[in-house]
Length: 189
Ligand code: PAN
Ligand code: ZN
Image (cartoon, rainbow, N blue to C red):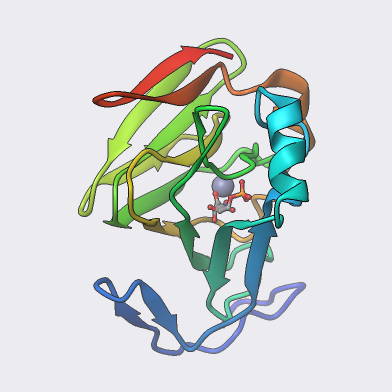
């Protein structure tokens, strides 16, 4: 066994139920309400109104007990509720990994999109159950629910990657996803 500054955790089994979109044993669950998404929707007044009208849960993230520390490999399942704010589909805050590490998302339920932005170029991957979206190092990423049901996906990422949310507030995500009659449309940020 090599020497580590922070000793790794012990091996253990995680039960992954793709149908129910659960990971057992559970670690922390994070719930993000509309009020946590300040500055992210294009229409700030509509966002404020949604906060005043009950501040709905937009998404939650259920983790396993694997810690977010260097060399560990945490996993989580994100569930984004269906909805729009002034036509813009509900989404995660989005972030950049300051330590520039890759990540994978596996879609489990519903219809979503993986929006990536490297500061210049935007990429979009349609996410349906079974799709693995690969996020290379250096691409900020946001998930969007473009369907009528909750969109759920598994994420696996290096524990030392870090999460920089300020990057997205400063640089944006290049594009936004809006509801149109037959689905969604990407528009300029
Ligand atoms: C994901 C995200 C999760 C929530 O686990 O953290 O979907 O999105 P925000 O972190 O942008 O609120 C991930 O990309 N981890 O690195
Ligand atoms: Zn990430």
